[in-house]
Image: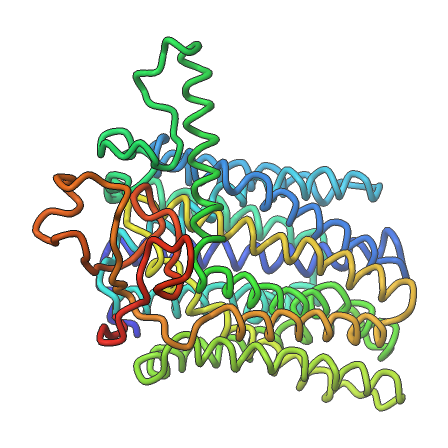
Length: 488
């Protein structure tokens, strides 16, 4: 896996990701303790609301950020967002009211919602090979696990000698180090777009609906730019919702969000009140969650070389509601213990990692290179809508009815996601699909040398606006996928 770090550009980007996420992990622990200080037993409700605001920023801002990512110098965008995050975190230790936490979290996550999709879309351009990219995804998962494993352990050590508000200084340092690493790295030039921007040039009058640059007669240049931006955002969302495997990916995200919300929101209440343990054990509980995630991330490159993404991700998704049911039963029957909580969090982390880590492969497989920023941003936004639902649900239920009810309800939600993914993702999902284009003229460049019927890696774009349906079904313009094609 570590061979991919020989690529100097990726190595520097990976280091930037590690230091930023390590700092974010410190902030996660500090924010939990800050919420407990400000709200006491209602800390879960405060955390649930704060994290819901985080998700709201991701849902609303990420698509716009993805649409802008190819219009703004990528390095400048990433560096400026790191600096913005560092500035906001510096203010968190000085808050005295719950509403101030909400405002700062919203600002912080607005910057993260801009940074993350642009960063994700850069990696496949740095590492175009499938094997290298798979290894990079596993390393990226390991980096995210620092937020819930190494960072909590570091936080526990620091809490022994300094107040928790000093942890925010570590977060600021991480963001500043990330900005420095990105600033000193040469990033590849993004490729030309496969759909929105090229629709007019390709002569495809039925393309993505992007406003042509020559349409200045219909309004001001600013209005035209806004129209193109809106079309880019709409295209990214349409690409995700029109691709079966990406719809299934959203269902999987719902399962992960339901389980993850119980961990991230309810842990402080379970540790401090239910089990009566000291504040220093909160990061250890979160660390168990990260340990499970990290262990699976290390194994996945080898596993994905033998099993396809669907089999690994869907099976792991069904583990998540099972783990939450065990937690709910234990809490309801009084069978509560510190080792049991750590074990459940370990399993949830492992299953969540098995679902999330291959997600980048699924997105990359489903979009052309020029459309990757829009695809990653749309998926990022829609997936975090799942967290927007799960966070306040977990926090509100835990505060109102107790953590056992919270775990039971979120287990049901995770089960809905797992079942939905199994249903939405076809078992036969080849990369290349045989299809026809009755709407295109015979001499269209896309049909050159094909005689009309042809097969290629199928993506939603200006020329392919619908996914295949069984041949002979009324209204279908695309034939059944060829069963002779193989997976990439």
